[in-house]
Image 1 (cartoon, rainbow, N blue to C red):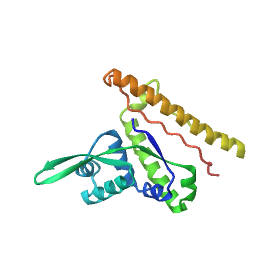
Image 2: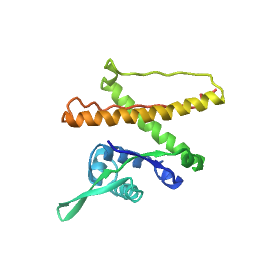
Image 3: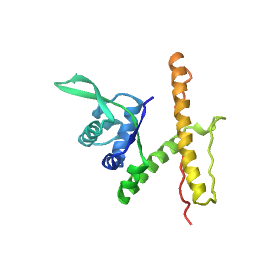
Image 4: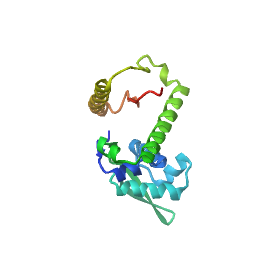
Length: 189
């Protein structure tokens, strides 16, 4: 489990808006990988992937963990250091166009994950949950919903920490990769 790191610098938050960087981070949170392995997996040009991995490393989000000699060259393997979380202040300071790109990239990623899960029967498990709630609230209710989301995320992190300890003790038997998506937004008219 990677710790969360709060992104307070709007420049780093802007850099995370790039969809390729989000894909790279997702892979490196699951396992160590080299830019060539990542490029092959996501079918992207190696030069582009290498550039974005270096950028993520310069932000301290990934780090070089080993070098492997390969046919007269050296293959660099990286690992994610943390899961980035953009703070409210950094989000507020970002230009609207960057916010839109970040949202589009994140929703695209969520859509791919959910569609893939649905196609593979992942919603068939009895403990799977899917709900959508249209609400009518005032400004105070909206703030309370946003605060509830933050509180829930903190509880989710504690559940993951406790699960990680149990999984390590059980040599990862019973491991279930899971995702939680939570959104609070103004509904379109």
